[in-house]
Image (cartoon, rainbow, N blue to C red; front, side):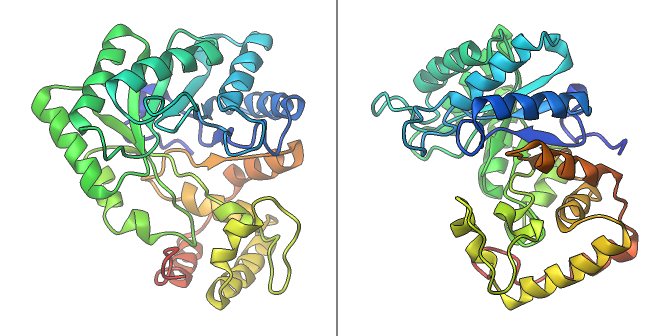
Length: 325
C-alpha cells in the first residue's frame, strides 16, 4: 500500500507495525530477536513497545520488551535512522506511587529509562499508554513538549483515549502552542469496531491523526484457531472468550470462504480489512514465532474488493463492541 499515515507522514512508517508485548512473555529473548530480524528483513521498520511490557508476568519487572528491542537493533548493527521506535508511558513500574502516571515527574524519569533500555538517544513516537485522571492533561502535554524540544522525542501519541479526551488534548495543545498527539493507538478490529468508529474515527480523520490499531486479530480470535466448541490451549484464551457468539462464528465461516478464494487465511483477511481503510496507518501485529510472523506479513499481498469489504462491514456493523458481544 502506498497510503501513509495521517499525522505520521514524516515518519514514513511501514504498512505493518511489529508489536513487542509478547517479548519476554510468550516469546523468549532468542525467539524475539529472530522475529525482529525476520520482520526487518521483510521491510518492517516500525516497532511498538511499552515500558511496562510485561510486568503482569511472574518474574518480569517491566522494561523487558524495551531491553530486548534495544539490544537487538544494536547487535544487528542497524542504522538508527532505518527504524522507527515507538514506546509508551503510564503504567506502574514498581517504584512506588510516583512511579506511574502521566505527571511531569514520572514522564521525565520514565523517558530516561526507556532511552537507556532502547539504547538510543531519541524515541520516534512517545505515547501516553492510557489517560491519567490524576494529572491535568496540560501538565502531560507540557512535559511531552519539553521532550520534543530537547530532541529526546520526535512525535507524541495517545493510546486508549476516548474521543472527548483526545479532543481536550488537541484543544489544549492548540491553545498553549504545545506539541500535540499525532497518533492514536485504539483497540480496533472486525469484531471490536464501535469503540473506535462511534466517535474517534471522525476525530482522527478531521485532525489528521495517524491510527495504529492494536489487537487487530482480537486476541487470536480472528486467526480462526477458535471455533465452536473448540478452545485450544493458549495463555490468551480467556481474553478471546468475549467474542464467542453465534454472530462471530458465522463471521468466521464467511471469512473462511473469502480466504479460500484468495488463497489466504482468516488472519490475513482480518488484517487486509484494516489495511483497506485509508484512515488506518499501520496495524500492530504480534508474533511468537517465525511462522506467525510470516503469516501476518502475507496480509499485505491480499487485496479486498469493494464487495469483500462491504460483506465484512455488513456482517459486523452492529453488535461489534465488547460490551454488545
